[in-house]
Length: 364
Image (spheres, rainbow, N blue to C red):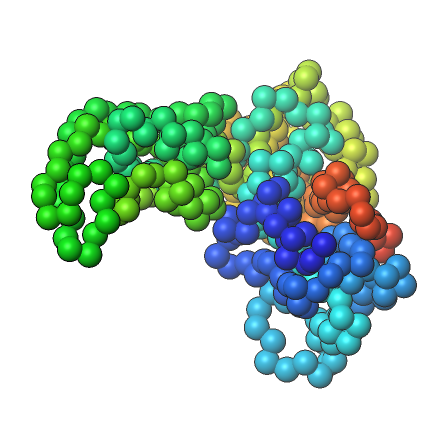
């Protein structure tokens, strides 16, 4: 199996097209066509992690956080980033990161936090915009079912919890081929009228190339008429953060103790207690201060995230409990998610979980 084939599998979990604009995801170091000898899964790619990959004969590191975040002007080994890149290149080790693509995934970072906290009735906290496309095409009525089914087969027509969704309008189309044409129906140089069906479906933006390939292969016409537009509808299963509910409401101190134990953190920084039970909980792995207002608008009793600054805690405004559990702690189970996913997909070589603790923060 080649590096690019492993990346294709990972994109089933978290398509890179849903990464945030500021991020740097994808293959950061290495050759996409290299044959994989083993995969090492980690949260961060540090020098010790590269050493571990060398020792365990893994030439692909799947790292949640990207080691290269902004541009590198020099690779002299002066910084830890440069040293990691140098060592990886020297030993022919590829490094891949899916960071915010996995943050935005329905089965990604925040789903893992929800699993650990046993939250039910989950929904996306901040749905990503402009991720749903609409295709309109026209096919001879006798061929419409074949075209529809081809589009359905590659994921077209999926809306929330429903599949094979489409809207169809019967009508009459006309066309006249020129001398260079080879019409399947009608004759070149003559205007032809055909009973046609207008087919409309929605699809996720990351599968657009698959949708068009299926359309062109299934459609009988030499020239296929179609249009694609971007919808403003919110995507129910894509975006930052999640909101869910505890099975039973908990008193605030009890909830904070449960949170500290479950998320294996040495410190929980929190806003003022409000003397009300915690039932509805919003979560966002990593730096989540930008989502405080979204958590309030969602009616959350508590918002769990990391990297809150001093003034961020004032934004609670006596409406919810803010809890900062630490950046690493909020994302620590992500590598387990990636490891488990790849182990199910790949059986012909080793997929290993890094044993290096990459948390840069210690507590006294």
